[in-house]
Picture 1 (tube, rainbow, N blue to C red):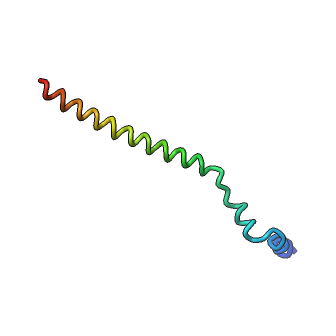
Picture 2 (picture 1 turned 30 degrees about the horizontal axis):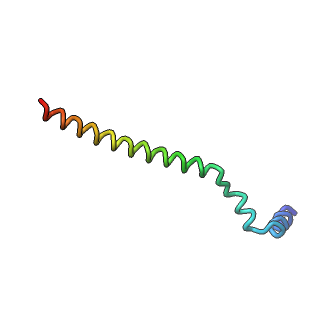
Picture 3 (picture 1 turned 180 degrees about the horizontal axis):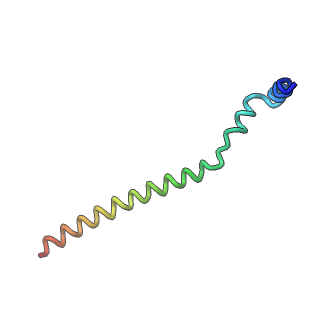
Length: 63
C-alpha cells in the first residue's frame, strides 16, 4: 500500500519537482561571499608583501 501511495505522489507532483525540493541552494550565496572574502584577503596579502619588500629594498639603499 505504501508503494502505491509513493507512486501516486510521484505521479501527481512529477519526478522533477521532487528532485528540485531536495536540492536546496539557500547557502550558495553565503559560500560565494566566503570565497570572495578569501580571494580579497589573498590579494591584500600579496599587495602587502610586495609593498613591504619594496620598502625594505629602498631602505637598504639609504644605508
